[in-house]
Image (cartoon, rainbow, N blue to C red):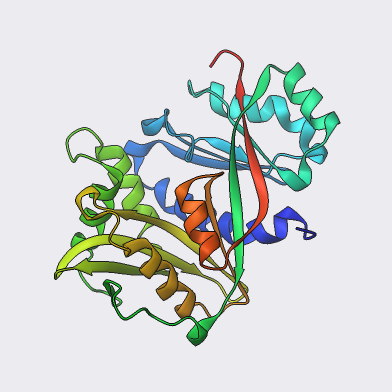
Length: 263
């Protein structure tokens, strides 16, 4: 964990920048992004209760002076500000400043990293079948599998489905479906750049869980990665983290989310 956290996060930030460039074209989402020094802030007015879309990522000691502007970026449109600090940027000074501004450390997530293995990652004889969508292929089954895995009902989660569809239609995204008994069971994505790759979301339909789908999707994406490294984010200490570590990932750094004391 000796690398600067920004080096590993670069591929994730690149995808977020691309996603929000497209999301701002959908006025119903009320999406916006801004850069404050080295901190990237994003918001989606139609999804104010979703931290993944409404937070400032990579806040650090050099950006302390921007904290009032970052706060206003959210509060001016009625969104509670969330500040994410990566472990390599954490310090007593930064923590005291955030606490003094009315924030508290609320939850911890993790960024994990693995060296791209290519063809050296074998498929298991009994694992689910994995199919990659081709360019231009109808993606409705892929998206519905993803939505079902995340529990996104078409009537009550239309804005989140719209945002997730934008995230999963990136031109640099490879998309995969896992099949069990010839039925779609899980979906996963791989975002690629020449320098690094990013596991950009995965979900399994509830009735199809515990069938090895996610492990198979991880192995397939590792085989397909040609960049030097692949990164992924997950809740710290979660089953997903344990699954990734079994397949060769190590924790690069933690990510602490700071919330206002009023939350």
